Image (cartoon, rainbow, N blue to C red; front, side):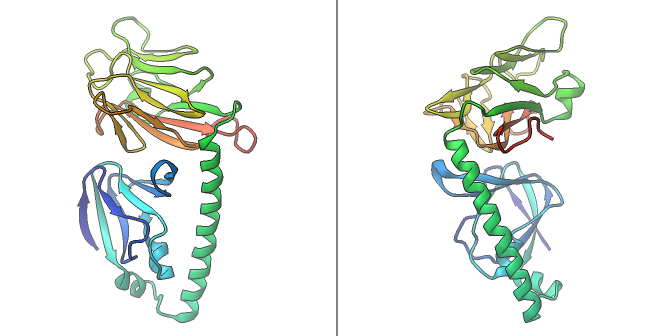
Length: 259
């Protein structure tokens, strides 16, 4: 396996590229997406120790998804031929069976993704929004817990002074984070715009990162849509501890609270 570094935001492969390698994440995180432009949907967010890119190699077809480094990452790359040899996939019957299983899994994933994208394009009034801490510092130092967002717009930001570490209300979560420039006051807002639920950066100095997309005060439009399912929002730079997981859930088909 050959270690290969990728900077945050770097494209690892794109839909249609040859499936010439399999990757294991040694460090960092990778987003797997399907579609393009406004229809681009994240189907997986992978971390250290996880494998990706194997489906295209096993099926011997072009990439059906794109992979992008969410943070600075190091990937262990195995060329396709070496991967197939290592797992004995030169047996025609075994390879045919694996191809069939990969194809079924890919078709199921794409059907689910299309359903999620349709919901994300037009969230209905019953969409449930959960905001959860995604970094240990938020829970242990600032006392942030999972919140049901019941009113939009909903702001997240810093609060200077006061005794309580984190205060949640119907319209905001404020965190006493004195001396932490990553988190502005206020920093970002969950809002509904043209039928979409998304994040708007509120002119913060460090910006906001939504599912790997940076929003800054110099952006033409500092708004990024959220999709049904899990979304990662970072207040500040990529190494900021002010990381949140925002879950959009359909009350008809989804559970009432994220697992």
